[in-house]
Amino acid sequence: MTARIYQQPKSAMQSGKAKTDTWVLEFEQTEARKPDPLMGWTGSGDTQAQVKLNFPTKDAAKAYAEKYGIPARVHATPPKSLKIQAYADNFR
Image 1 (cartoon, rainbow, N blue to C red):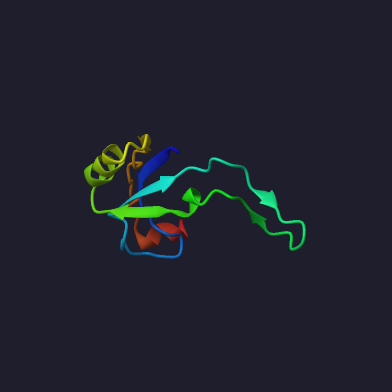
Image 2: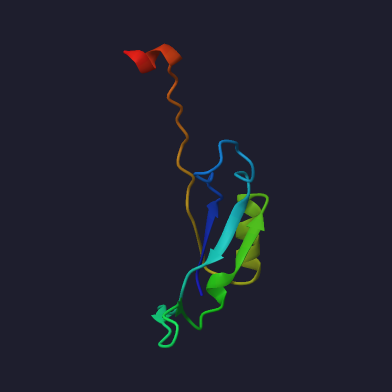
């Protein structure tokens, strides 16, 4: 039962930075998904993959994982780069 810790990314549908400062501890799947023969939906018996825990800081998420003996990998947040350009650059 391993987990990964990452910072919540900005949604593609939002322009603001709401909820991007939270850190998430999410369990990885231990069992493959399989299609249901009757309905065709995919599912598995792994209920831990449905658990998503939110933390205010990376250290709080790591402390939680250490407290309960959960091996966790921390994924670094990629650096944010801004492309500054003027409106007039659209017409060149």
